[in-house]
Amino acid sequence: MSSLLDVRGLSAAYGKVEALHGVDIEVPRGKIVTVIGPNGAGKTTLLAVLMGLLAGRGTVIYDGGDMSGCTTEMRVARGLCLVPERRELFGGLRVEDNLLLGAFPRIGKATQTIRSDLDGVYQRFPRLLERRTQLAGTLSGGERQMLALGRALMAKPQLLMLDEPSLGLAPRIVRDTFHVIADLKRSGVSILLVEQNARAALQVADYGYVLETGEVVLEGTACALAANPRVAQTYLGLSGRFERNTA
Amino acid sequence: MTIDIALWLTQDAITNGAVYALLALALVLVYTVTRVIFVPQGEFISFAALSLATLQAGKVPGTVYLLMAGGALVALIDGVAAIRAAQPRRLIGIVILNIGLPAAVAGAASLAALRPDNLWLQMLVTLAIVTPFGPIIYRLAFQPLAGMSVLVLLIIAVAVHYLLTGLGLVFFGGEGLRSPPLSDFSLHVGVLNITAQSLWVIFSSIVLIFTLWLLFEHTLYGKALRATAINRVGARLVGISAAFAGSLSFTLAALIGAIAGILISPITTIYYDTGFIISLKGFVGAIIGGMVSYPVAAAGALLVGFLESFSSFWWSAFKESIVFTLIIPVLLWRSLTARHVDEEEE
Image 1 (tube, rainbow over the protein chains, first blue to last red):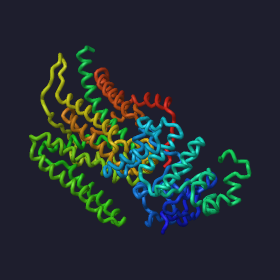
Image 2: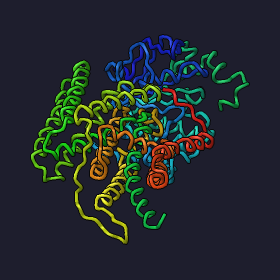
Image 3: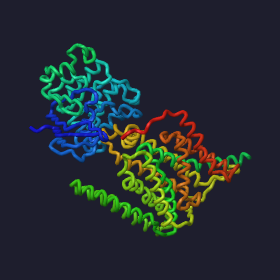
Image 4: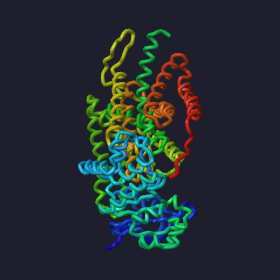
């Protein structure tokens, strides 16, 4: 079976500074693939190019079709969805409106299913139901993360891309987030997970890539990566010094 | 000043202020959604008022031909794009929307020109002529350069303004025109002589503002526009395309401008370039609202109406200068109180 997402030789640059140099990545259907790496390795750039927010060179085959020339909106309509690091919520709109706008491509076509999807999101995140009439800008960090995830789920993605979902969140909420990610996989969503929290990412993922200064330096199954001495030392902090940060 | 004169000036202020408020709302809408400072907003007023007066005179206005030409141009550009993207099925929709619709409007216009007694029909036809200029202007002038800086977009807006003003002169000539009011009825309250037309202006403005509020508060398309204004990247990530939001906001702006033009055409004589001055006063209101706040912009526009009306009594020669000088203290106050935000990088 072919992969849902097949990226070959992807390069991208901000002005003259190249941030990605010929990256190859695959996301098989129904799997969680993680990209780990230090700050500034090009992880966020990779997602921006895949989402059509930034122009890149190389081939991106998604669901058997070439994505070159597709605008962000066309990618969303084809089932690609990104939860960005900065969440990019609509702060001046109510929580419920944020969620409903997540289903924007379906508005006017499938009103019934939008309603039931909204109920599904509320079931998954009861906190959002409590806060549904509140403005998104007044939410706490953890709630904002839930709203960003919920808004993404309203798009009914085939491939969900998450950029640093654990960044700046309390450990309990990080755990919840990774539970949701594992749960989504069980419901058939393929996931591309970009994380600095390598330990949590490798625990939940099936396959992983290590991205450093715009290049894939290592890849393998999540278990193999976790067992790799270099990964263990650099990203899992097994030398002891980073133990508390990554827990 | 006696009470009578004050009342009379107040009536004038509210009538004009209502029109300025409509324009201020349109300017805020277009700016927040597309970052375009929409200089040509006033052209919709001139086009609507003069098209209506021309229909009254039993002639088909030149704006109809401009509409068909603009539609054909959009059809050409979108058609080529559709063929290049190997989606020939989209051609049908493109042709219906950009060639069929203007042709239908042209048919309605020639019909309306033959019925000088049917003012309602002519007003509807005028709306149908002028409103499509919104999306056409967006598609031709702004959509290809939507990612540019605010300054570039402003320069394009100025260029479009000059182009449309010039075309207005070609279509309608240098003579001013005036339409008849819907009703000659007027209400005498004490010394105050309230015309039906000024009540009509105020009533329509309130209804229109309320409708806009409903749109933004209670429909998902309205919320999609707000979402785009709040967070452009977020909007793209949920699939709200910049082209959709831009086109919709320009359509609303054109509709608002056209309604304003129809409302004031029986009150003042409109020349091909009158709309620009009127929309500038709306712009002062929008500046008071910082180009982002709808309620403050509307209130600011009302303030402009009062300032203009009362200064025309006390110091009539400086009426316009007083109104436009208002921008300076407002900008000073805003730049002192507002947190400076760098223009977002795209």
